[in-house]
Each structure stands twice: as C-alpha cells, then as structure tokens.
Length: 354
Ligand code: NAD
Ligand code: TYD
Image (tube, rainbow, N blue to C red; front, top):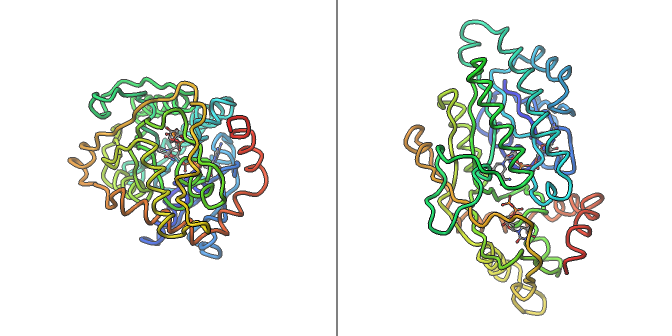
C-alpha cells in the first residue's frame, strides 16, 4: 500500500480517485482537514476498504510513526500543504508550520521507517514530494521556461515555504540516502478545485451573478495543466523516476489570466447562458493587484518526457471544457464548500477590493 498525505485536497483527492480506478493497491490518506480538505470529494470511496482515511497532521511524529509501522507502505506521496498564495500573504505562519516544519517531521518519520526496512522493501521504497513551479520565481516574457536547473528564487511566503521543503527533501537524499523524488508542477485546474483559486472562482462567481475579480492588468501568465495529467505524471515518476532527481511537470499551455477568464465566460455562455442573454464577460472587474505578484511561470517539461515518456493527455481546450462541465454538474459539491469559513474568507479577501 501507499501513504498519501493531503488527499482530501484538490490534487490529492483526484490522485486517490484515479489511483483506485486503476489499481487495487490500498491508500492510507493522512489529512488534517484544514479549510481546503474536503472528504465530500472522496464520497464515492465510502465503504471502499482500499481507502483508509486518517485525520491528522503530517507534523505529528507519533501518529505518522505509528501509521508507517502498522501499514508498512512501499511509498509515501506528500501532497499535504497550505497552497494558496493570497492566504500566505495575509497569514504566512500556517505555511511555515505545515510546508516547512510539517515536511521536516514527515521526513524524520519516513527516514526512521525506511532505516528499519531491509532487502527489496528498502531498495524499492520511495518518498515522492509534490511541489510547484513557483519555487523558481518569475520569468520575463522572453525568458525560456523553467528547467530543473533553474535556481530557486521564490517570491511569496507560499513559494518560499515550498522551496524550503524541497531543499529539506533534497538534503535527506544527499545526507541520509533517503530515496526521494520531487515533482515541480505548474498551475493545475479541473474537478474538485477549491473555489478560491482562479478558474473555479470565476465559474462559481459567474453563475452566482457576482463580479469576476481579475488582479492588476490580467496579463500575468501561468502554464495550466489538467489535474488528471498531473496525477498521471506523479504515478509515472513514482514508478520509474530516479531517486534524488526532480521532474518539472507542465502542460505547455501558457496563457494570460484574462484569456483564461474570457474562455471560462465563453464556455458558460454556451453551456449555461445567463437568463438575460448577456455575456458573462460583462461581470469581469479589474481589482487591485496581489502584492509581489509573479508575472510569468512556464515549465519546460522535456526531462519527464524524454526520461519517463510522460506527456499530458489533455489540451487546454479539452481540459477547460471538462472542468466547466464538472462545475455545472456538481453544484451540490460547490454549495457544500461555500458554507462556513469559506464565506468569511471570500468576504475578507474581496469585500474591500470591489
Ligand atoms: P489543497 O490546498 O487543495 O489541499 C491541501 C490538502 O492538505 C488539504 O486537504 C489539507 O487539509 C491538507 N493539509 C494541510 N495541512 C496539512 C497538515 N499539516 N497535515 C496533513 N494534511 C494537511 O492543495 P492542492 O492544490 O491539492 O495542492 C497539493 C500539493 O500540490 C501542494 O503541496 C501544492 O503545493 C502542490 N501543487 C499545487 C498546484 C496547484 O495548482 N494547485 C500546482 C503545483 C503543485
Ligand atoms: P491562483 O489560482 O491563486 O494560483 P497561483 O497564484 O498559485 O498561480 O491564481 C492564478 C492566477 O490568477 C494568478 O496570477 C493570480 C490570478 N488571480 C486573479 O486574477 N483573480 C483571482 O481572484 C484569483 C484567485 C487569482
């Protein structure tokens, strides 16, 4: 079996659903259930003995030691993190606690467990750390995309905390020989995405008749990857990646934010037109920019393609259409997410800007 952390979140939940759709190898899901953790996303696994959910913190040594000793996983995949840049600007502390200190404790538990393994179990064990392209900092319009050799230049508390965790993971390989793998992926989108992030926020706000807040001039560029493609990349790296190596994962889909928002609006115009017949794009509002906003991210995913044969299955056009369809078909999931703390956050975040 494998231990997956943070699998009640956006990418982790997609990963577990895809994993169990393709194999019967059980998954232990260790998740703290922060505001971003949503077990409703895994409702289809209710009663499925292959999914064992454990409510807890990656930084809880005693708990993680016990889980490793009891279940003896062949791999640990670490998704658990605080992941939203805007939140890291308002309150960086949780990011340091989970992304840095939590990853450190998790590594310590895993190192002790791996140290006690023998033979084939020891040789084949892997710790896969899921990270982001944001650790590389920002690109000018003419810079080549990030390769694995780019220096780390994180600019937000989020990316700095992820960079710190990547360095710890690297150090545990070089110092202790822990068989680690790191993936640095570009912006994901798709089903089960918490509606505080750009694409789901725009879909949900548009349907609710609210404004669509575009930061600054909307010309910041991100490299978008459909979440299922990120999950297939992680499975491939886990299967065939070389311990100690890092792999950049991206969709070759660089687009400015405003283009993303207009595409979402156009798809909604087609799939769920406004009652008054007007275009959703009328709801777009330009708001104050994010402090320290990185202008451009772009991933060179040549290495993972060349060495491991991975490439994305979706184009942006097919992936974004599936995503908009999913949100239209899963309004109950959205409503469940929108209750409680999420509302307060949205008011705090967007109230003063509009
Ligand atoms: P998310 O915020 O949707 O989910 C994070 C999950 O981790 C939640 O279920 C949360 O409850 C859990 N968690 C938080 N702190 C924890 C702790 N201390 N112990 C146990 N569980 C904890 O995030 P996501 O978008 O699914 O991202 C998953 C990982 O992928 C993160 O490490 C993130 O940095 C990385 N990543 C995300 C993207 C993206 O576009 N979303 C891109 C590249 C990399
Ligand atoms: P986000 O989904 O927060 O991901 P990240 O900051 O990690 O790339 O934001 C994606 C881009 O969209 C980023 O450039 C910020 C911008 N953005 C907006 O313009 N408006 C919004 O309401 C949000 C949430 C993001």
